[in-house]
Amino acid sequence: MNEVTPRPSGRSNDALREVSITRDYLSQAEGSALVAFGRTRVICTASVSDRVPGFLRGTGAGWVTAEYGMLPRSTGSRMKREAAVGKQSGRTQEIQRLIGRSLRAIVNRDALGERMITVDCDVIEADGGTRTA
Image 1 (tube, one colour):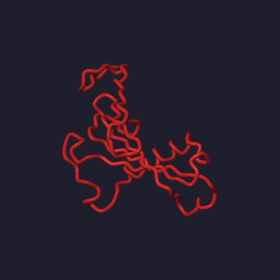
Image 2: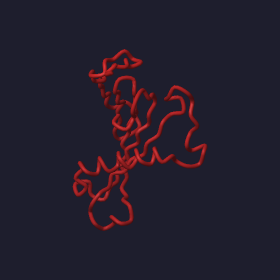
Image 3: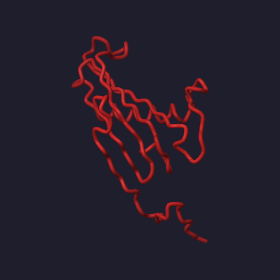
Image 4: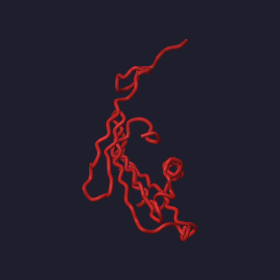
């Protein structure tokens, strides 16, 4: 039996989610965007600092790192803030590493000079997977 289970949103199984990116979403960060994949929404900011991890000092190369989090009510039921629990889950650590490694793979770190870009990704509404958002 190949029964097709309908999605809760009514979107067919072969339909892509609508994608939108709103640039300059926040005024305080050097760069920011509201990224939406269907009803999954993530606020992303980029901050630049004039320092790099110790292993890069004196090399002239920059670094890109990422932090990831979800608001407590971004899901169907409220979850505790990881900061309140005192540690990040393995899932959060995995996603942070995925974001950081993906960005480092496409950034010319030599062109950054000895600067670090920190990308913060905060899920404000989760509807489906957030790793790809």
